[in-house]
Image (cartoon, rainbow over all chains, first blue to last red; front, side, top):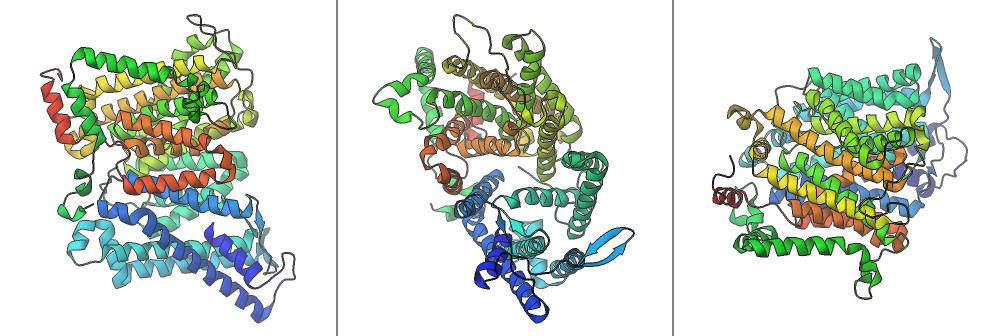
Length: 268
Length: 364
């Protein structure tokens, strides 16, 4: 939600691009899109860090039950979306079209547009860079250590608050990038836009196995394909049910998701 | 707050926080039986006379602007308290995160709506059927899914809630998105009339249900199921190793919670006359969970307080219509940050054990 609005604000207000203005070309187009992408990522990342600071940090230092941070986070998400709802009076906000959506090719009867191609290219890039970051950098090692065992990580000299803050920043950056590409394709946003997508992301992560980037990638892909096929075969009103039933069946046989490893101790 | 005093304690800080619940328990332990009975009867009388509070000049500050105060007392306040108590059996007692609790509420409500409009059964006859159906749904969901833990269980229960709602939305036979209208009001009972102009009667029915639920939870808590739930909540693997049949007791807590939700649903449908899938969204599940955690997870009085507060607050501040959800969010964040165990946290474990021993052999 934050990312999509950041994109809108940058194109419409910062760069003064009119709502039904002409499409951009060449260097201006690349400049605008890059600026939107970076702006959206930055704003989302910073907001995510702020959320961590306000909703989680104090509770973490108190070391309470697992549900208190959840409710605090729900409160935070209500605050964010309701503030935007107040500012936009609850209406959908259109995003000016900058990229002309030309059809590139038709393969097996499917029409491939440039904006869609962009998403398909960028998603694996994001996946591989995140994978590389988490598995091969010092900071990534810190993140994995904290996720395994906070207490031990602390004893090993890891600054937990910093690591978690950076994790939120990265989550925000990724979401911001997704939001930008979402806007390029759909060109409108609303205050409650993040809700369903957030649930879908959570479902995908669980399907793949929590804490596993590869699993999340496959889970997201499977979820998207499943939704599309279910819409085509059963009608779009049944797609959510299909997804959840498949999820339940998968978890029956693999209680830790498709790529989940050893049973992790999770306590409520 | 002086949290640094016990850096290695998992629940370090709340040792020093004032714990109203413990103080209350101490008072209660000191009282003799007549005093306790008087106190209980007086509290019930105060709760039962709440619908009249709007009429007097001192207490009419409770009145809700825009929506009718008597109706607000039934839904959301009474219903939320009832459902929060039911969810507390699942989340608070046995420590499982259920994000689809609204499904059982919906099943109860739809049982009432379908049977009430298609058969000649009245609300009192449908009531046990609705509870049974909700409990059956609890078993149906519980057996395959309760092996899951934590986030995995949460997402599956959330999925179940959505499955129930979307099925209702897409099944034209039960009204689809239009819902079901003209649900009959319950016939009179003990001279109390139940219809749209008598919301107080519904409130008293809900109050009786709340009292029954509290009684049930209190009885179960000090007996075998309660101790099994406590063991499961603290460490499921250890409980299993000590011979607690964890799956059985997890399903039991799920089913009891579902039954309470179903009961709330039946009363809701007969009070509202009209129901539609819109009333059973994921948001309601989240709200009920908020009531439980906000009030004090695992503690009956905290949960009641949380339910009353979070249901009543948005109605009371309806005059700032646009910003009221924002205020709601701010209250959630602030209270969770400053009282992470809820307004009235559960009793400290040691004290709970002590009181049980004092009961002398009563805990089989």
